[in-house]
Image 1: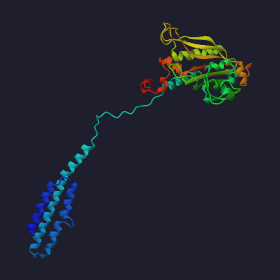
Image 2: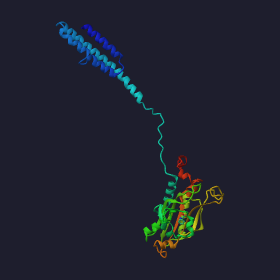
Image 3: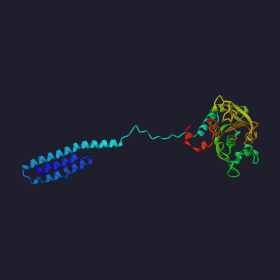
Image 4: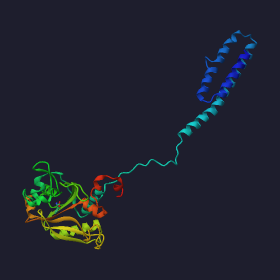
Length: 339
Ligand code: PHE
């Protein structure tokens, strides 16, 4: 039995020495020392031993058990350390790797220009109004003093949905809707929004673009107020050093009417942007035609007003020296990321 125990110990120690995984070491523990293990099997034969032999073998068996246990525990320390090191090496984070870049979004340049213009007018006491893009013929034309066969309707080649419903060709119908809503209160609003025209897309035309409308109605409003407000506006938007000029023009809904120019950044030298003229046209405006006030139930004998309308794309193009309107629609990141 002594020999059996020695052989078992030698085998066990050899296996332990060769084991490179903690899992294998635990299997070895069970195989030799477990309830159904080899050592237990040998000890079962103790019954056949003499009374003198029994304690000797018993002591030896205990020693063998202890030695195997110690060998396993010691081997485990090394093996587990190696396993831990392997896990750490595998899960190691390289803090010097460049991070994955997540691109940030940014507002569209047209949105930036709209917001900038809104800020200027909010600072002048205006509020922001809105109206539908799918409009009635009445709000788009009739109520703006453009009756059905008025030649000025040709000025706006519109996209009709039915005879009476149209994709608004300008933001001026918001003038009418605001007067209907606020009557008889005074009005001081701007109305930004999308407008539609029957135009083919090219460098300077787009069937969809944006306008910002303005309307002021109150007692004692004069053309001088219009000039004052629009001069402040143009200088805030383009620079205090710019000049502003008013040229006589015609719109059915304003009388008198004007087109407003701001002096070009080339300072009158004449450049590509102003086509040598030194002036940039930025908007149409005028005193509200009394006929328009009357149709929307404001008393032209008591109140007067002024209105203006500007193209946002046009203003953005002048401000940022962009020469093709299509870039606003193309969503080219190289363009959009510049703002
Ligand atoms: N609605 C005009 C246009 O689209 C602009 C305008 C608005 C002119 C208000 C005068 C007053 O061209």
